[in-house]
Amino acid sequence: MFYRFVCLCLLIALQGCANSGPWVELKGQKVFVEVESDPAFQALGMMFREELAGDHGMLFVYRRPAMLSFWMKNTRIPLDILYFDGDLKLVTLIDSAQPCRSSQCPSYPSTYPAQYVLEINAGKAREWGVELGDRLELNLD
View 1 (cartoon, rainbow, N blue to C red):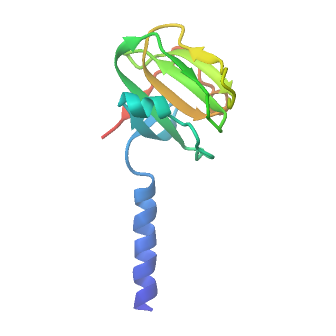
View 2 (view 1 turned 90 degrees about the horizontal axis):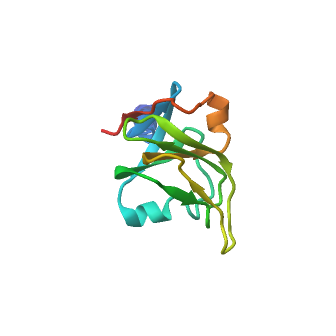
């Protein structure tokens, strides 16, 4: 009996850890994020991944706002790509960018300088009612 109790406590503790770490909030939705600020990891991004949990995403952080452009080469998951400026205001929203496995993949540029880019599962931004001008809240500690 004691063994089962210890196992149950461990399971509960591990579940709490599974969704700890950095997260962002957009339109009241909490998204656990992998934070990428290293150029080598930014270039890899979501390539070759087979799935993305519904409450997870990837946040790209740049040193200063700039005109940015992403593409979906070797990406296997349709994604929404959200560009935020230095004040964390949404300046560009790419709805449902599709995977691309060819050598000629379209790019998805920001329409204004951006410093943060959030990638989430395709259709989530529409589901949450995200609009240009919405603000992203960072919780990266």
